[in-house]
Length: 318
Image 1: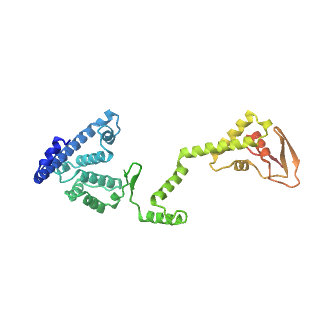
Image 2 (image 1 turned 90 degrees about the vertical axis):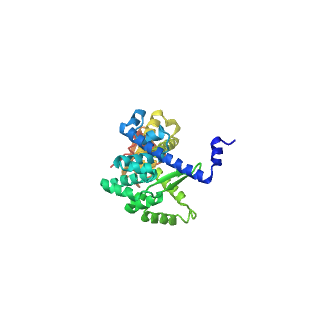
Image 3 (image 1 turned 30 degrees about the vertical axis):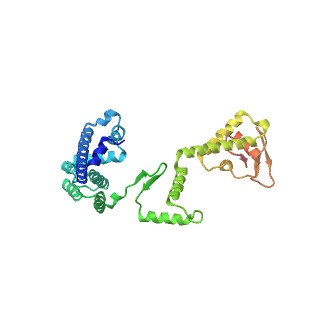
């Protein structure tokens, strides 16, 4: 069933429809201008702090229901009006659209970050060249003054489980991407930029993510402990020895993410001497002559020495 409003619109002539549309746009523009004024007063009073919000942006999105883009556009326009009061009437009249005002303020913010200052007259001159222009024309005008303005990232959803990432990159980076794709062409001939980006992000997370590092360290310590326990004679597996072995493995894992059990022993061992301490049983060691010096030590002996010496490796005598 059609609403009364829909029936009313259908009865309008073409001329009446266009006239009413223009009036609605004018009312929308005036309403937006009023919202900008309200934002200015809320900001001046820091009213957002009384509502547990750290910024006007957070207040606009969480308390007023604006999406991030709409909230930021109104905040930018408000900041421009605060800096240049003359702009307020231009927004009200429609000479300067809300989007254009927001872009101009973003431009000034980027310039300030780049240590470039503008006088009030210079700012007004920038505003003047943006009056009655489309969004694309405003972008072109601001980019001509500072190409870095165009180097902004954006992410927006394009489906239930996908996003569009838009980023401006340098010519040098583009060449590096092409080179990397060429190097991977033999294994991934149809690789898309998305797949390449995913691979690089995964490599970065593996290297820098503290959570993944911690998981790998725990896994290695557990595996080393199980390995050492399996090599120990059943009659000599005491709780104390097991605890010491586990602590030694955990220490090794923390000191080096890539260090193996053999690396750990070798790291703390000294070169083989003419006389080497031999292992007969736990707690009993004797020195014996070796006709041919050898670095080979059985896994069981090595493990027992490791436990006895609290992870310091084997002992040698001259």
